[in-house]
Length: 195
Ligand code: IMP
Image: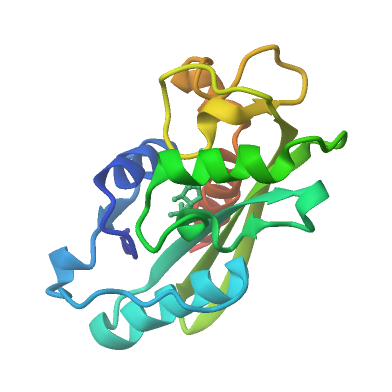
């Protein structure tokens, strides 16, 4: 089965492709001749994921899915949330985002947080949403050099290390994105088995 993943991020494409397995061929928007920037200016993860999936479906005609992720920190009222990529600046400046997060959390006793991923799928003219989350805490200082984004300051519940210290296999097994993608994979496989 061919399906478009509405992302231009090669790293994500490979990660998701591995979880979905060989029954699925993932195409990028570029593979379908779509070179326009895909918009994501909604104020929720669900809104952004749907916006991206609809944009690609309308322009390519292919069934497709899109994801959006945010870090939601309880003591900051769910911030940075949908603005996670652009928390400190307009660019995707991971170092500045992490520094601002630690500054804004300074002195707060509650450091609980969660990563949440929403995947929107458009298949056979219908829309579906899948969600994954991982709960944890924001550490006082950065630790580790693996992963990306807020990984050096996110310690998942039940672990002594941050996502940036844990091996990639462990992160993928327990992560927000891993859970959402596995739900998508199960749904797609069941659909295929029933055809
Ligand atoms: P995206 O929707 O997957 O592009 O994620 C938006 C932003 O959330 C990224 O720019 C990162 O700052 C952050 N983020 C998403 N996933 C992760 C993760 O697995 N670890 C750390 N930060 C993440």
